[in-house]
Length: 315
Image (cartoon, rainbow, N blue to C red; front, side, top):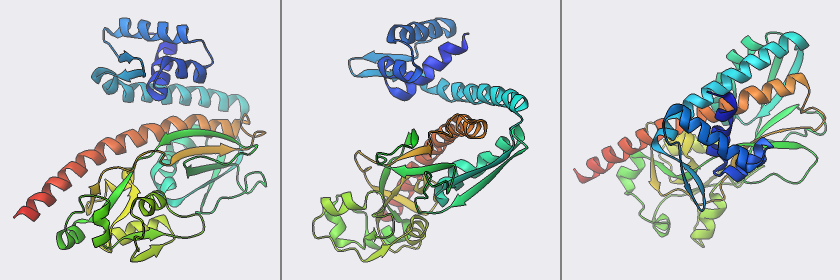
């Protein structure tokens, strides 16, 4: 099995077509298609369904995707560790992130990262404010946004996030399930208003239900999560986190695109420095693999919570 075939497999799975994958890999489309055919022949499985709109993973391809991502991370770790010996990676790397993104995608991987680069110190700056990378307030930023403003900064999208409406089980037992956006008029609705807000989904909610009056406003993502868990109302929230909360139930369909994505941002002059390149090469595949596992686990929990709630309400 050729590792370049696996890289083509990952690129097509992430980009959705051989054409988009060829652009991300910097090769022509024919080469990508040939590598996918070579990999399918090597494993004896069809990995993609091809159509006019692109390439979609088969069931076997979906099952093997996580293994390919682990191989990618292992290969990156091997390369980076060898490079670290050559370059003697030292110094301090300043990374800024929101609390939620740090908890989900950065802090859990720092142990392994520091094993690879024991002489590289990492400072994690937790803030909801957008620090000035151009002014050297940080070296790398992990930001959540539908799109980033035009600038001289270098940005790479890590993943998209799905958002939906949630409320606590206790709240829904008392007030009932909203069956449509219009139903929100008879519910307590929490909105966001603060330094970098409205929070994702808030503006869409207010556009869909003109004249809707929120019963309270909150200016921080973590506080919004606690308000939902406390049974204070209904609000849009990121599925990757809310689905894992035992007491929160998804009560309306996901918000349609465009929804926020997670981006890794740095200054152009830093992107190829050893310490920044080491962080990017390690954490982008790590965060994508982590997200995939959380989404799958969260969907299983969400299905169970909804079934239990409906049974309790029927009884």
